[in-house]
Length: 244
Ligand code: UDP
Image 1 (spheres, helix red, strand yellow):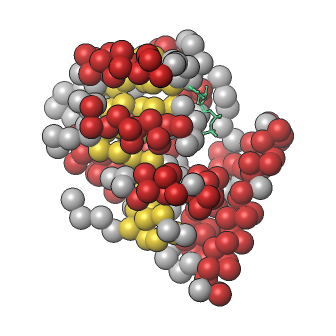
Image 2: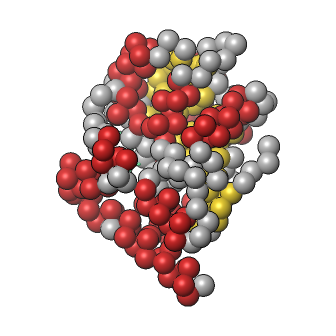
Image 3: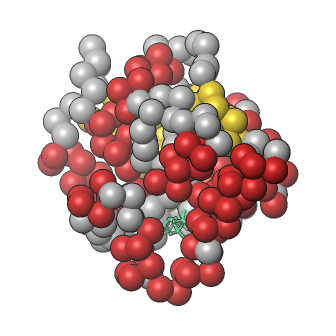
């Protein structure tokens, strides 16, 4: 599949709208290997500037969607505008509504004990076209990983959602993708907490205005240090655009 990407501070973000991203997912489902999808936001983009292993993992992804207003703004500053924000949570929700000849099978991996199961229950109630074939919490020791891979493969899942937080989930997917018999591995951050109803998204008007970071700062003020990556990222884009 041909990719049209835009280079945002070294990260090749796909130039896709939500519906184009969904078409890509459909293509991955029809293929015979595991494809990787990550949803970089400003924090991950900054982390990749400091962590060359993470940068390489992002570069090897099959689909990178611009998760967050910061990434869309940076793409505009750099004159390589992406069509729209495609957040991980919205993309996951849209895939639940995809109608295929057979129901798409999902494995939910990550979150505190019980979160994946609670998310599964809500998804099944809300999306009749999605099938959940396995759940596993995101707290494990390295010696458990072989059993986790066996569990995922035995479930015959098509799409594996990995919610271990960034960059743990990206590194985990990268490490094990060749052993996973799924079509899609997607790093989804706090998505399972949201699906389970345990974490609320910002109100729609704030999400539309690109202010989800402000809501997050209000809800989780202790994250402010990490969130400083958002203005840092925007400034870096400005510097890059005008100073080359
Ligand atoms: N998480 C997990 N295992 C870990 C660390 C985190 O399953 O070892 C889960 C955590 O429970 C939460 C999700 O990863 O559901 C996202 O965590 P966080 O909010 O810290 O990540 P970020 O928003 O920075 O991606």
